[in-house]
Image (tube, rainbow, N blue to C red; front, side):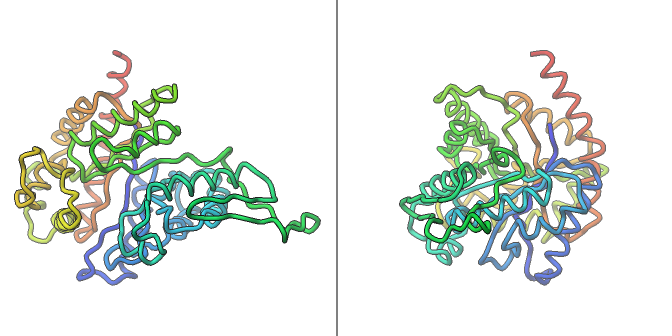
Length: 368
């Protein structure tokens, strides 16, 4: 089981300037790399006051020569970009990183970004499918290029001059292309089914309840079976919120502090999901009302917290609940309003908890 970190990133604009936010995001990446994390993912938000990374690949490029871990987009919002731009920029990054790139793709979840790029009111899942198909056609062919779709056209034909090298689009370092994953949130997600059909991996969101996450893999397996593709749990990343302190009491005390970054995060998430009727993923029962979805409810049910021993026990129970080991445990970034608390948590996760969790997973797999 690999260990990764997913960074939306979500910051409180009352605490930090945009420059300070970006400096912290880079510091986090360098720190987890020093701890031996396997992979790091960054989100994309163009019109947000609290998520300042507008281009994950630009940000990640600053880390290529200072890190060893895999670097990935979490995710490229495909409806917001022309497929030709995605194809050429991903190929460039893949070469620069010598094949350490993981291509996370999604339909986009920020309505103002969709409006900015003319995608508002369109079928984002259709746009994603058309875009990635075009990207793969570009990478698998030579000029002249001529691809027509419902949402985009891509053409290099009349201006080609192969004698001087005008025409070819850069192909990725990894062949035939970098590994792809799709982010999954909703129960019984059709996106998980499609990912299984197409041989992509999936990442289950951190702000979904365990029962919801189990349905993601069920749908993924159905997608694999639909096309006769073998099912392999290594293609499943699960993002979780984890806080580890030296004692259970220390973890509880931090989570009870007014205004801590976990509270800020779930205040934002619960308000955002309530605004577009997406609260099903936060509910532990179908009978829950939206009024019952409080910040404390989210902290109690979705943050795995405590001492190293307590967190290890909780993670083992979680692995068992998911039906066994999966490909990667992906920690979700929380703003470092108290850097010493978050650094200690990450250190304990990487150096104390994960070796024991991996040992348990190996024993479980050997017993099957």
